[in-house]
Length: 185
Image 1 (cartoon, one colour):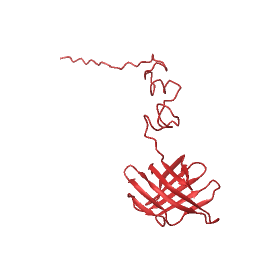
Image 2 (tube, rainbow, N blue to C red):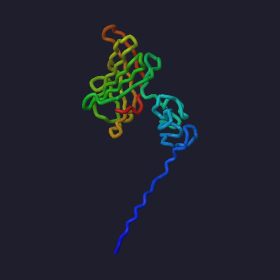
Image 3 (cartoon, rainbow, N blue to C red):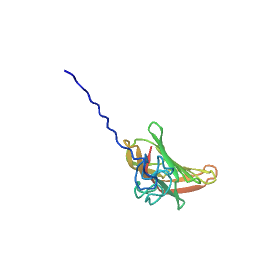
Image 4 (tube, rainbow, N blue to C red):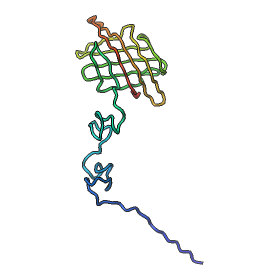
């Protein structure tokens, strides 16, 4: 008995006849008429440009909703961070930092990673560095409240407020109505 094996090769036809302006994702493009062989970069929710129907730079529309990630009122004037981060500073300690290139706020927390409120003192301190480099450290009477402390997704949300005093000048500044939203740590 004779056995014959027949091999058949199947291949998908690749369309290399498209152009970078035909409104179709083809020819190895990463998106419709962008990326790959096209010279332009595809719009995304992380490209630093308000495009693709976003309501602000990289948020709203097809991206995550827009909301302030770290903000406060400093002596009655609204302060919004342009960049911010949260990170584990040491075991059981979280540091939240934000700047708008003029003033910086740092929130230091050490304690259980659970929702709740902690007064300024051993477990919570706040700091404000002003446009002249002066440091205002939190005095008693302030607080930080965690509405969310998600240890699975490593995000925190909540509010804070404190009176900052300058040890050198004796001056003070009021940081109130502080909010931090979905900061990843």
